[in-house]
Every structure is written in C-alpha cells, then in structure tokens.
Image 1: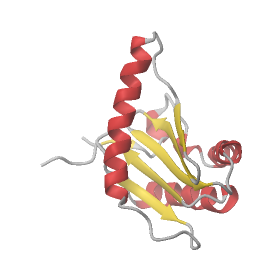
Image 2 (image 1 turned 90 degrees about the vertical axis):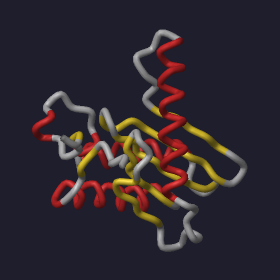
Image 3 (image 1 turned 180 degrees about the vertical axis):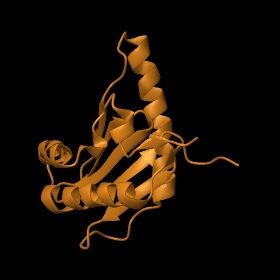
Length: 147
C-alpha cells in the first residue's frame, strides 16, 4: 500500500491549515492545499464562496506527476529545480510551489485573483508562518518525511 511521504498532524497541521486559510482570505483564491510528491492531499481549504471543488485527490495526483516532469525538465536544462509552476486559462489558474523537499503548495484561483497577488500573499503568509519555508534546520520545520 502506498502511503503519504509526509506526516502532518497536531500543531503542525493546525499551523499549515492557518496558512492555507490566510491565503484564501488575503489572496481571494478558491482552493489551497498542501500535497506530497506522491500525490496525497495533506491539508486543504476552500473558500466559502467557491463552487463545489473538483476531485482534489485527482488534482493532487496530477500535480505530483506534473511536478516530477517539471523537475526532470529543470535538470535537463541545467537547473537544480524550478521553484514554481503556473498554469493559467481563461477563467481558472493553478499555482504550484515547492515548499519543502516532499511538499507542494497548490493554489487554485479564478480571474478575480491575479497571479501576482497570489504570489505576494503566499510570501507574506510564509514570513509570519515559517512552516512552508525551505529550511536546513529540519528539527524546527513541521513538515517532516515519514519514517
């Protein structure tokens, strides 16, 4: 049986959930979630005004596959990684950012939330809540690989 690569519970889960809530409120996005690189949803939030969410587990699986492909492309082009990925259609956009070795932040937004605001609010939220910062001090980061 495949299991998530990250254990997120207790206070760590609460802090991540608070950050996702802040992104929803300040960036005016539809959905925000944290997924692992295997495609498991670790935490998610949706705006009260948002339509019924799509199948988040399917989105998470596809995001993980897309992140793996993007990582391979970065290496082929001589980069260690690409830090973020943006897909934008006429009405809906998708923003994905690596926030820990094994975790991806996924934000789904509509035309009322410009991508610049999404990125800015994400950075502001991470300053207040360093949970999503890539850190060398693994002991203080609540996003930990499963053992």
